[in-house]
Image (cartoon, rainbow, N blue to C red; front, top):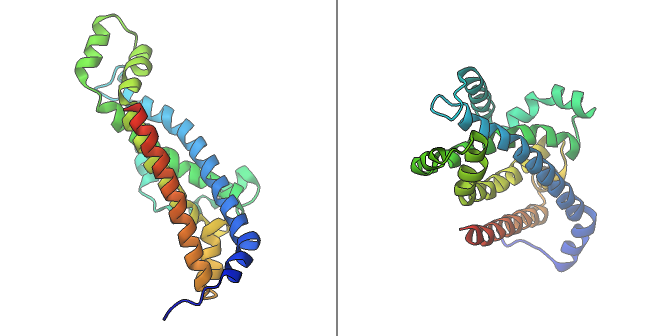
Length: 224
């Protein structure tokens, strides 16, 4: 059956429901991605540095970090969000709202980013690393001045993917009290059978993904 969507309905939804939901989603995306990137970057570097074949092999640290990343990544995001409610309440003081959602979203994001950064660094040609060693470069110089520079395009491409994944996770967080577009889709689109709201949110999410991917593709070409 053809959807009965009018211009008046669209403009009624925008300022009252959709704009605040977009703002909450963007806040979740921004803070989760920034915090996840900071933590994930260092863990990814440590995984490469302390691996059994790394520049500074430390098996205990490596297997501890590797186990942590694998453990967290084994959880579906929606289950992780629910499981971390006590921890979120301890950190933030509440388990609802976009601020509370940042905690589990950050934990999910940093584990994924750490693995992506680790894989990007491991793809750097070993001959380049050996050449840097032969010139007397320190481990810090090899990591930051050689490996990261060589892996930068791949890392950036992976971060674009991570950004889109975090955006998708914000909609899941909306199902358990985080607000944002996910909550609006569930409350108005699903529970109230409001097709106008559902398809409006789908359109907004599609536009956001398109913007992220377009900016990512443009900057990736510049780095390449």
